[in-house]
Structure formats: structure tokens, C-alpha cells
Image (cartoon, rainbow, N blue to C red; front, side, top):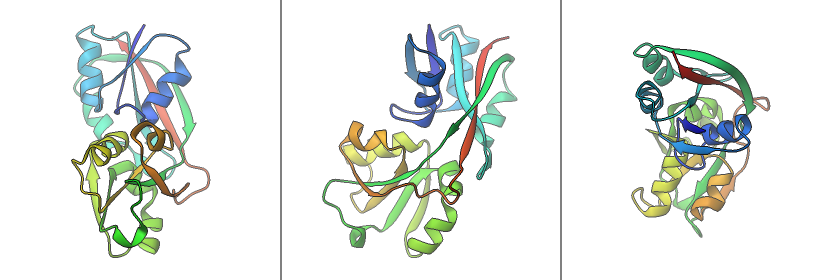
Amino acid sequence: MKIGVMGAKGSFSEQAGETYLSSGEIIPLVSAENVLSALNKGEIDRGIFPIENSNGGIVLEAVYAMAKYTFEIERMFELDIHHMLLVKHGVTASRIQSISSHDQALKQCRMYLKRVWPAADINPYADTAKAAEDLASGILPETTAVIAPRQCAELYGLDILDESIQDLKFNYTTFVVAVKG
């Protein structure tokens, strides 16, 4: 079975795919639009993407994509989300000038960002894991920190500067498992 997920390798959507499916292929498609398009074309058997977070609210990107495609919801489930602040190896807090992540992650960490990083430029990015990948590969400057899942630190060789930075201790995201309609 092929599962398309909204996110790059290491994303929370990939974790949701692993939770849903014990065996099969997980294909990182970065956006909800890409997931539903691939599902519509029959390139994947299931699509998994987040639709709402208990703190950050509705995932607008997913809602806009859902409006364009016909599909059925096979299942919905929640994952407890913990965000990490990741940096390139050896980069200290004093060198950070900007923080990048998916808009939802930024919303879920907004009070932390205001309290701890008031001078940093906050930049929305296509995906949490994609931001980590791009920081590691040098696409983002090393003066950037990213908010991403813990597994991205190991996957992309980044350091964890701060752990569980989401504003609320209980931070659940609801994921949809979509099948062709």
C-alpha cells in the first residue's frame, strides 16, 4: 500500500502514516494539495494530512485542498505533537536571527516565540521537516533555527536547541486518512 503524506521525510504527517500503517510505502508529498492530487490520480492508495490542532486551530492549507477534490474520509485520529527548536551543529542561541517552520507550528509556539525570541524574524515555511532539511543542506542560512519534530534532528544531523516548545503541554493534531471517492 502506498500512503502519501503532507510533509517531507521526518514530518509529523510521516509519523501519522507510520501510526496508521504497519507496512507499506510512505511517500512524502509536502502539501495537502499534492496528497489529494496524487490520490485523485490513483498514484497512492491513501492520503494522510492534518486538518486541525488543539492549539493552532484549522490547517487552512488542508481545508483549501479539500475543497478542490472529491474523496472519502476513511478514518481520523490524533497525535500528541511536541516541537523542537533545531539548529545547525554547533550554532548557539546568540547566533540565531530568524526562525522558520510551517505556519501551524509557528501558531502552536507563538507565545514561546514572543517570550524567548522577540527579536528573531519569524518566517512561515512549506513544512516543518522541509525547513529542517533545507537548514541542514544550506538552503536556509545557519543563523536560522527551525521548529520541527525531534526525529528531524537525527535525520538531518541538526542539534536540538530547545525541546517541547509548543505553548500547551497537551498539543494534539487531528489527521485525516483519505481514500479515493
